[in-house]
Image (cartoon, rainbow over all chains, first blue to last red; front, side, top):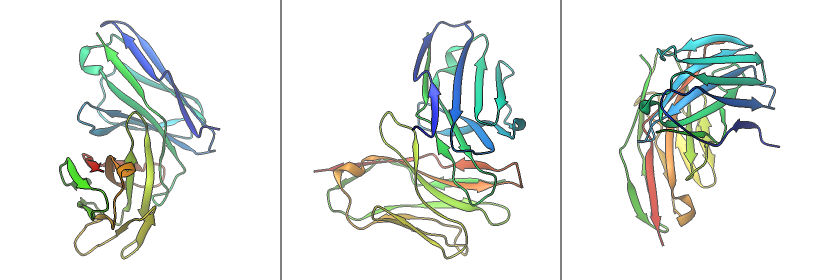
Length: 113
Length: 114
């Protein structure tokens, strides 16, 4: 069983469209994250949810709206897609505590044309 | 603020060569430190971690020691293989209860030649 799974793996869409990425974890963790990886492989945190509550929002444009229906799921909806949104988006989860590691999904490669 | 600095790549080595990838950090308090590896087209996988000063993390022949005095967590491997070719990320975990986040370095691409 995949620990952290994201869908879709690839997403190609036109500028101005709205799209969603889904993430599910079966590890029983209480915290989930979205990270963005740019073309130079730089990873930047976007959001963090702890027990379904938004904890971290790292100055992400409000076109990006995360939603956590329960502790096991964290979805990312993006409105009015722009060329600069093209990147790989990773979902991750962890159990609260600074000594614990994060587990990552396989990533969703978003290409905006 | 909290940050991680790691050496720029790419690093190109011959098989069986010794590997060092440097990583230093800036953090308030005592963060946990991690090395993650990303193979092409895949997500990040934890390679090793250390949670307090002088701890040594090790896995698959890779090692890193948490050095508080030099704020470093350098990754080493005695003899690399072609299959070790990947991007390696140094990271730290920082925050307070319920607000932890993982801060990553810029990644170092390793290419091992047969």
